[in-house]
Structures are given as structure tokens and as C-alpha cells.
Image 1 (cartoon, rainbow, N blue to C red):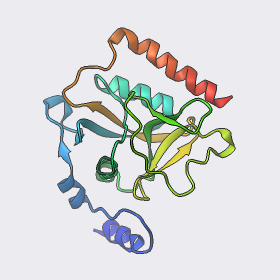
Image 2: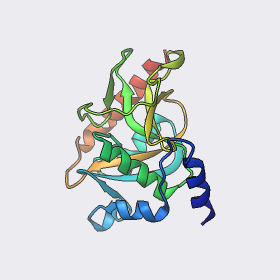
Image 3: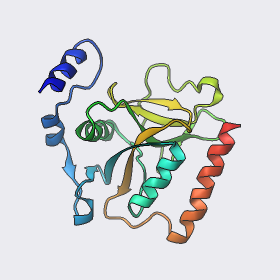
Length: 193
């Protein structure tokens, strides 16, 4: 297939991930359950790629609406990062970048996951995070460059990866979701200032 040959030729001269459609299909495992057949298992999470470009806060809200317990994806090890890249490549081989569920902790150099999990892994691209113009408070994964991460303004539009803990209930009750969403919008607005 021509796009596979083109990808491999480009990849010989860069640090890009070389994945063909057959390779990604082999690496990925589907989540169990009839409602999650198009979600893929990554550690204890189920993840799915969504091609619609949204801002960070709108992508987070969309994930919460897609599935009980849904959030933008958090990544906790190299294998999970590689699996996430594989999911995107399987769904859209030419995709450049996607949102991760990470954001800068208010005016600091620390980052947090929107799902509340521990920040125990990072894979920043060289020179990142750089908080260019003091406005880069959210995190994207450069799919084309081995899944390295970049800080970027939260208003940018990106496709995204949603995740939920496999076999778990919602992290928050339905009643708390509205409050939690309002908190996310408020904090992203504060970061703009």
C-alpha cells in the first residue's frame, strides 16, 4: 500500500514511529463488553480515538459524555504511551497530534491528570514543556514523533483520546459531574489570564 511505503521511507530519516496498519492491529487488544467493542485496552484503561478537533476543555467534556467514567487519557508508562500512539495510527494513520488529559497546575511547572491519577510518567519532546508566551497550559501528544509530548494553549483544536478505567464505576457521581465540568472551565479560563 502506497501510504505504508511513503511512511517507511520518511521514517528512515527521522525518529518517527514506523507502524503499518497490520502491526497496530496485532499490538492492540479490544476492551470487553458489547458497548466498548471499538475501545482498546491500555493497561487497566479502555481508550478510544475521536477524530473531531475540539479545545481541551470541550474534549474533556466530550469524554465524560461518551462513556461512564470517561476522561481524556492519562499515560503512566512507556508501554501505555506506545499503545496510545498505536490506537491513533490504527484509526487515522496521518494524524499529527492529539490531546492528553494533562494540564499545568496553576502558574507552575507541574502538571496534573484530569482523571486525578498520579503524575508518574512523562515523555516530553526535546525543549518541552516551554510554556511559550506563558499560555501553554495543556498537553498534546505528537503522534508523528514517537508520542513525545508538547505543552500547548488549551484553546487549540485537536482530536483526542478518551479513556475510562476498565471494570470501574464512574469516578464521580452524576450529580458531581456538572460541578466538576464547571471547575474545569473555570481553571482553563484562569490560565488564559
